[in-house]
Length: 276
Ligand code: C2E
Ligand code: CA
Ligand code: CA
Ligand code: CA
Image (tube, rainbow, N blue to C red; front, side, top):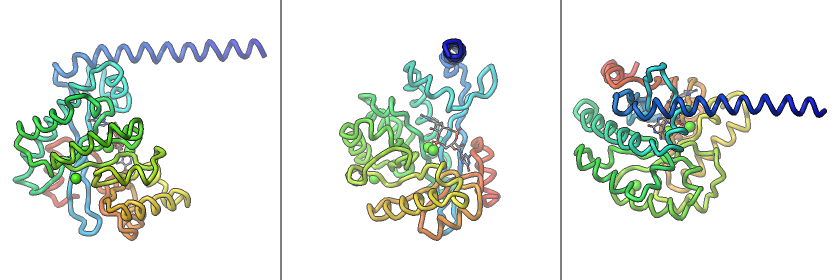
């Protein structure tokens, strides 16, 4: 048993070492990435289920590093630990708002959703930054949506409440991302000025295979509606899932069934072809 324990220990140790090495390599590359202009925003359509119309797009960051494409799931956590997330958030906000402004003439009223790291969201001057970006890009606040994860809000809901209220006063839309993954209580959520809940894709993707997921999804939709909040389902990959959501009054959906995240030019092309 002792030998086995030791073997497990050294294996674990090696894995940790590899991860630490990889993290510091990514950190090193990440420092140069902004200067080298290696980031790009992709846009994924958000569809109104009742009308089938495009109503918005979620901006998703892509990093074309010198070592190839790096997924945001890998580099965002490192950026958060090293403080690099703040300049990245600034870049994302400015780029997304510039794009939103530009697209108003082609797709009037289109709303761009931006993902916020909990770290940036809690920066002292974050709300001022948002209003600066809106002013700088001349985009109207209702064309910007900020996505904050449920866990980020619940980490300190009093502070989150204060920040969310200030953002609400600016007139931007607020969405709770990855909803269903945390442990929020309805009574807390009710007091936040949020416009939308985004049901996490882990529930949506197996809607027809897993009765529990279907029940949770249906419950989130009716709970959100009872609170007067709109619902968007992410990770909609199949027609059957789209129909399930539509039948239950889910307002919006996003997923590979409609379209994958696309570079800006491709997004415009997709729109001009009527969303196909
Ligand atoms: P998220 O905010 O939950 O974004 C949804 C993820 O699901 C995206 O992955 C998207 O490409 C993917 N997705 C969309 N539709 C489908 C579908 O039908 N099926 C499946 N299987 N996946 C789908 P992506 O782009 O790799 O982003 C991963 C995560 O990285 C995001 O999760 C978000 O937490 C974070 N992220 C992305 N962009 C940014 C950013 O600009 N700032 C920050 N702070 N985080 C970001
Ligand atoms: Ca999101
Ligand atoms: Ca609002
Ligand atoms: Ca999610």
